[in-house]
Amino acid sequence: MELKTGQYIQHFKYGLGTIVSRDEEHTQVDFDTAGMKTFITSIAVFEAAEGQSPRRKRNSARKTKSRSS
View (spheres, rainbow, N blue to C red):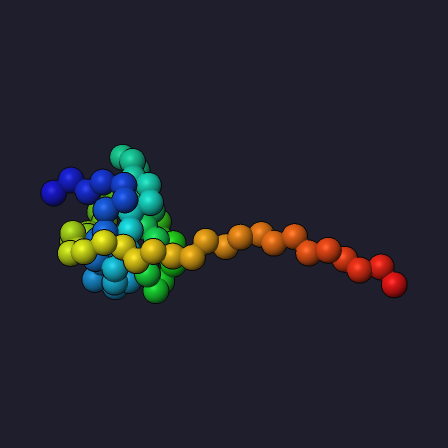
């Protein structure tokens, strides 16, 4: 099975996640609960998961005004 960037997958240890990047050497996956992990592509074992990855809130940098006393 050929996995693609953006595909929702399942890993036996880390659970469900989304493939962020993939090339001949490394595969990066952002897991729902375990965060970002990097695997060696040739030995990584994933299964395609049903459904879509959950939408995550983006961290936005807020500018705060400093008050002068």
